[in-house]
Each structure stands twice: as structure tokens, then as C-alpha cells.
Image 1 (cartoon, helix red, strand yellow):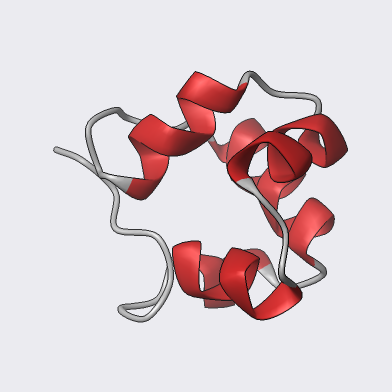
Image 2 (tube, rainbow, N blue to C red; image 1 turned 90 degrees about the vertical axis):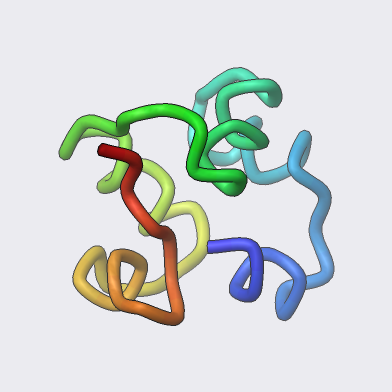
Length: 65
């Protein structure tokens, strides 16, 4: 997720605004510190303009256990 956000040249705050999520949540997802719901994966993938499957790939977000 971080790579896609940086590719777009946007901050965590901008991504959070686009996805209608809190900036601290976006940061914790990028650091794999929190679990993420399928709804929020959808919000983030839409905000980044990528497919949710791509976002969850090894090169995308790593889901915390």
C-alpha cells in the first residue's frame, strides 16, 4: 500500500481523506500493526485506483495476524 501511495505522490493524510478513514489508521495499516476489514481494503484500493487483490498482494499491504 505504501508503494502505491508513494507512486501517486500523496501523503497518508491525503490517502486517508480520499478513503474517508483516519490518518493514524492508514499509518498503522502500512506498518501492519492493525487488522483491516474488507470494507476498508475496498476504500483504500478505490482511493489508490488499484484492484483490492493487488493491494493485498505481497507487494501491497501485508495484513496483520
